[in-house]
Image (cartoon, rainbow, N blue to C red; front, side):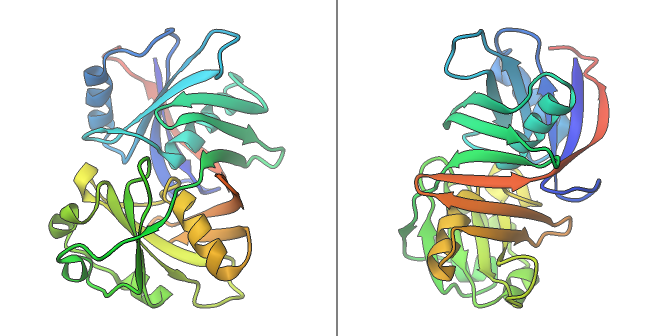
Length: 273
């Protein structure tokens, strides 16, 4: 069984967010404990597993995501990575429907090599700061929002781009501040830059201190910044060490996320499934 490492939300290797991708020939997934062990061995922020579904179903492929410690409800970069593998290997073309824990998600391949994910828009609800957030994050928020059931992050607006880039969180203290993680964001310092807003994502509670590029978080960042900037089509820069760009298009209850991906490693899973 082949396993690939794909850098997502980037057009060059060793940038963006790496994901493991395992495409199964079987009509069903192995046990969750087996998938979790493989994801722990790969030890990336997510490893995606997909298998084909019979014709006539509401989706074409079943898709699951695992962090090194738990199964995820929603993952953008590993979905982009999976779609990239399906299209570059010839297993799929055009628009592909994926059956997931977050419902049916669609991915579409474009002639320029980019891929677009069609995800549910995260509902934003203003919330009060959890105890200890300022100290754990190392900055004082301007606003705070819960991002709903499937995303499960605390969206934290900070004063400016420089503050987001300079964050050095206390990861152990940050675990208790949200269900999944904390996403810090601010408007781009230079309105003429190639991006409209910046973000960083911290998820120590699921085994990821800082995620390089978090696609699912952009389903919350898109409506947040679209409301403030007055535009439905934006570009977000996740300002991690690896960095990556996500083009967001707000379409009501759906958010489109567009980016590129590059396969950097291809090998065999010798232990089998």
